[in-house]
Image (cartoon, rainbow, N blue to C red):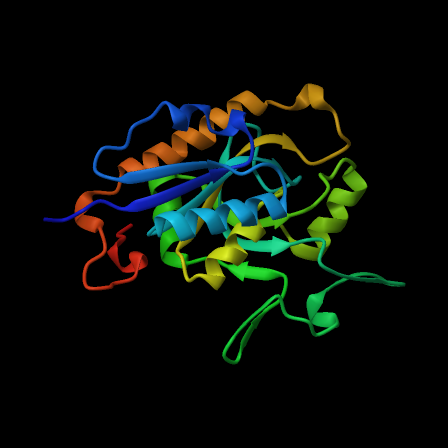
Length: 238
């Protein structure tokens, strides 16, 4: 008899998970973790989720700030195609440089090295964007929210992100280390510019991101559960 998927859903704060907490997912074992804000909290919670529940898939969700001129507006949902640490590196006279400049990798596996960037599984990304009808792109993870348009444009030039948050790359990092399939999707609460909370809509962004997660999970059937050790990505069809 086939079984459903073990899925761990991670979000930082309560407003990002209220709808998920009220939802049941027949056929799947879904666990929810309210991680707390920031990289360390997210990495810690992700590690606990993987050790305790051995998920077939980790989904990171919540709100984000979209960068200008990406086509994203408040309320939109975006899917991460790549996760990037935006703070780790070195600042020289000519500006910020990533960890590749100093030659210190965050993770090594054989001959491969990962510095600031974690590319996510293309098949999973294509599945989610096709299902949800949304865009994908680079998600930038920062320790401090960007509150000026000048700084936003600097990040755009350095990393070409579609949005920023404070947890995603840390979760991708842990999932890479443990070889756990991972996705991230977020709702846009604001445009990254000179900070004006009056232009934000956290409630709508949180609702839309959670609805997208619910739609994604419920689109999977128990027949897509692991069979003969096949990677989860081989069980997805767009």
